[in-house]
Picture 1: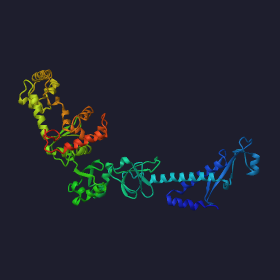
Picture 2 (picture 1 turned 45 degrees about the vertical axis):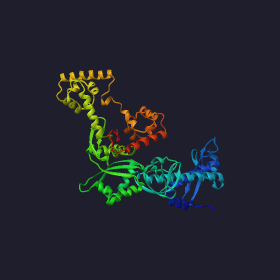
Picture 3 (picture 1 turned 180 degrees about the vertical axis):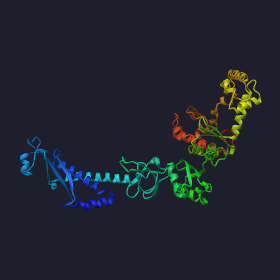
Length: 498
C-alpha cells in the first residue's frame, strides 16, 4: 500500500512546528542514503519528492559518452538513443526512475533513522530560533528527573537543564514539582537539552524583584547592584528616579509582602535591601547593614576601605562566617576591612607613643606625624627628607634631623631586641584567640592566614588550598571562628576579651 507522504508531512509539521520543506529535505536525504545502500554507492542517484503523487522518487542518472568506461555512471550513445531518447547527444545526462519497492528492510531502517535524526535536528533548530532571544527571561517548568546532578526540566515543547553549578545547594526537588528559573544560555551544540537555566545567578534575584515590584518594571526604581550567597543571604542596592518614591519601601511592600514573595521563591534566602548612593564611602557603610558604621577611611590607591564600627557592632558587621562583609564587598566592588573602635583607638594610642619615643619628637610633633599617616618609628626611618618636609612645620633641616634620630632609634631597638612599634608586633597572635590545635594554627599561618578576619572572609576553597588542610580541618576552623564571633563585649580587634 502506497503511503501519501503529503498528509503525513503536513501532520508532523503541525505537531512539531517544523517547516514542511525541512521535512521533505530530510526524507529525500534519508531515501537517498537507503537507495545507495541498496543499489550501490557508485551509482549517480538523486531523490525528489513528488507533490502530486505524495511519493519520494529515486532517479538514476547516466552520462551519454562515445566510449563507456564506467557502466554505472555512463551509457553509450547507441544505447541512450534506443532506451531513452532518439535525439540523445554525447554529454547529455539521462535519468530513469528506479523501483523503490525493492528497497529491503535494512535500507528502510536506515531511512527511518536518518529521518528521525533530521527531524530532531529540525526540532532543535526550531527550539533554538524560538528561545535564542529569551536569555535573561524567567520561565516555569516541571521537574522531570536528575541526570548526574543536573536537573532536567520540562518546559512543554522542549526540555531544559538546570546544571548543578546553577542550583541552590539547599534546594531539593522531586519529579513533578513546579520550578522557576532564568534562561542563562541557549547552547545549540549541546547533545542534550539546549536551554540552560539558573537559580543561583544574581540576575535571577533581580528578575524576581522586577516581577514583584511594578515600579522596577516601569523604570521608576532601578536595581544598581546585586550580590548573593545563593540560598543563604543576598544584598540588593536600589535607587529611585522619582524623588517621591522610596526605593527600599517600594521593594519591601506593605507589611513586607513584596520582598517576602521573593524570599519564598528562594526558599528562605535572607535579603537586605539598601539605598544606592554615588558617594562610595556612604554606599559601603549602607552595604554593611544591619551593622551601624562609625566612620570609613578611604584608600583609593588600593581600592579599599577601612570601616570602623562600635565594639558591639563588630560581629554583626562581619557576619556569620564573614558573610555580611563579603556580600558588602561584592555589592560595592571595594575591598573592606572591618575594625572595632576600641582596637583603632588602642592602635592609635600605641602608634603615637611609638612616634613620641623617637629622640627629639615631642607630643605635638608626634601628633603631626600621626596625622600624616606615620604609625611607627620604622616608617619614619624608611621615609626620605622630601617626604618628611610635607609634614606641617618641618623644614628640610628639621626633617633631616628627624630622619637621623629615627634611624638611630630603630637601630638601637633592634640591637636591644626590643619591639615597640605596632607594625613590628606579630599580628599572628590573633589566631591564638581561636580554639585550634597548635599544628592547625601553624598551617594556617604558613598558608597566609594571619588574622581571624582573614579566615572569616575567606572562601572555603582558599583555606582548603593550604597544605595539610582538608574538609575536617576546614570544619574545625569554621566552628572556631563561629564560636569566637558569638562572644560579646569585645575589647580587641575581633570582639574577644583580652
